[in-house]
Amino acid sequence: MSTVDDITALILDDHAAFRRGFARLDDARDEQELLAVWDALALHLDIHAEAEEAILYPHLVKHGDDGEDETADAIGDHNKIRDAIAEAKLHPVGSEQWWAAVGTARRENSEHLAEEEDEALPDFRRHASFELRAELGQRWLTFYGEHKNGRDLPFRDKDPQRYVADHRAG
Ligand SMILES: [Fe+2]
Ligand SMILES: [Fe+2]
Image (cartoon, rainbow, N blue to C red; front, side, top):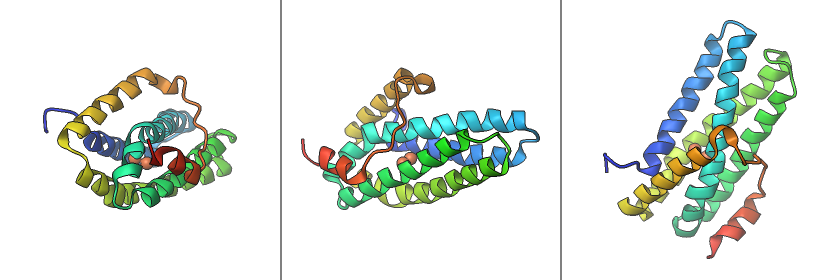
């Protein structure tokens, strides 16, 4: 397991990067630094949510003990994070409104990471074989390669119930 790329390990790596990214915002000394840190962090958050919605949750929704609820929660959280990122883009970097939107993204993300790490991922691990975890890990890496810098990803909100209904069967 340690020499292959388990999807849950790849997800945890991203989560750690998000926590570091928000901490780096605290240390940025001017708007240029803020922009550099935030642009990369916001893009990574958006791509990560799309990757989970394409690769992780379609499996969890079908096989998890509480997969439908966990999936609906996650899509709703992803929407809130996406919305806050989109809101931040409407304001000058470093302005009061920008910090408010970034603060919302940070709060929503912290809550979401905790739920994902304490509920969704444990549920997934209980039902996914090592082979599947490695296979989805491979797809995860391919997804990031194909969508470098968010290429071809719309970053649009999804209706949580609709997503569950669409992925529950088949
Ligand atoms: Fe995640
Ligand atoms: Fe997520």
